[in-house]
Length: 140
Image 1 (cartoon, rainbow, N blue to C red):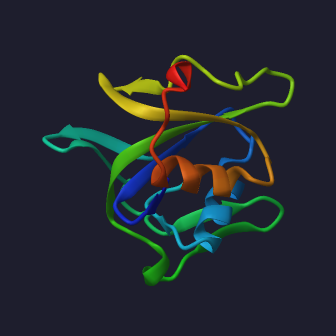
Image 2: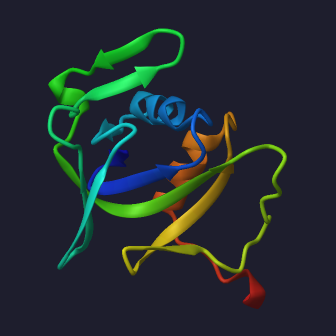
């Protein structure tokens, strides 16, 4: 689970779909890693807070290489969740202009972004979703 600034990004998807690979792409763009593979999520006054389970902070898996320990400056102890990213296999359709743009997590709505696994523009799309306001295209 990476974060830009204070905005945490919960990346979801099937096993081996590319969640850690996407997290590594985001780290290259300046994100910090809160957790990989397992994330503790707790509701609070400001929304949902995410942390890594004890002993897993700063660890990330690289397929074909193994588990590495990131330096302290590439990690964060906690983040406020701001975006739910659903990684989809290429054989499933992603709506171009979806009606639903939120996902309930512990009864809290998070902005939702569906992406194909291994989309070369995935990190840029996540950055745009966090940075720019979503338009109501029905009134454009």
